Image (cartoon, rainbow over the protein chains, first blue to last red):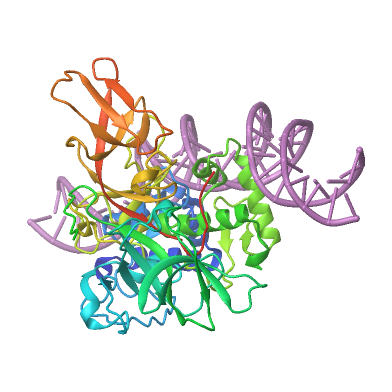
Length: 232
Length: 232
DNA sequence: CCTGGATCTGGATAAAAATACAGCTATCGC
DNA sequence: GCGATAGCTGTATTTTTATCCAGATCCAGG
């Protein structure tokens, strides 16, 4: 691809790359012409057309500075040291996330026997990064649009802030609730459902163990068009 | 630095980052205004000045799209990140999906100016395959867990079955509703909201043009943990 | 020799874009 | 209440920018 460019074209391409790096925006035709000493902006236009024909850049008609580099190989840049948990297959096209179904009492959420599926979704779609998808049971979070059967994207973390929706383990039951803390409550937190049919759960941390398994970072609902519910 | 921005300013900053990721160039004042629904480009200008004052962006006087992000760390988007063109052709295996925002009257949904972002999600995660993600406006489908700001995965198709949730264009407005047809109704269909506050819409096909743009195949909700809503 | 591509000049024009100016309405601290 | 600030509307003007047209050179290949 790049190797069938002429020297001059390669030079233009290089100029575009540098211009983006230095100024933050791609160059205009006039800027290319000025930098290279062309007396006509059309020279730059011709070169851009040629580069686009060769597929190394993409031009957006009518848009000022509408030049985009087509990354052909490695893109130098951000180093996101990513601790992917069980990255089974795909590399390069984005990792996949395990779908966690019914969680048995006493065993860790990410135990292999809880993984009922995998979906190809980039963990980095969510912020903070999602570590797994938890299949939601019940309608206690109905009023914030988390329905039975939905997949809840969860960031595994024992830390959660007041008001966040968390995946918590209470008396060996895994539930999704909104966490409510208060400065005045010494040893107490609340787990609130988002559905008036479910009363708040008050937890006295001296009496019961509450483990925050993670915080909810997103929702994914599949099968909207083809209702193949696995109700039981 | 970033933490002393107002919500609105943070939103503008986020928009700039996404615009660079999606189009390869920073947005113009007019583009910012259009995306956020401002009726005056000056609103965008004011916001940019404010962001520059706070040191999170740098403006180059006189240069079109002369906005540069001051890398302070965090908040995703590296300027010239990798973004495949993902052009209007074949979708590969691990392609990304365009996020469609505000759809202007009269123009096709998949027009380039409606694309506000791209997300790396496999279209084949959904069945039938998703062709784009539509950002939902309003709460008319609240009771089936489709909330304001959600991303609706849509399969582009003019065919829809009775009872399916569709993306429809009625009087040049794009809406998401449940489609209700009946054998007895000759020239009539209903578009039902899933929220008692919204009355059913009865469409007489001899009087009004109803275009089915696609059927809903899934829901994606991001930012559950960090509420940076794009409401306006 | 002739064609076609690469590389330019020079000129013209419509659209896009930045930027200034004059307001208006909230909200917030004092 | 008062003034500052955020967050807008609306209008106008000047630059910038993309894009088209009509050429001119040079060079490689058939």
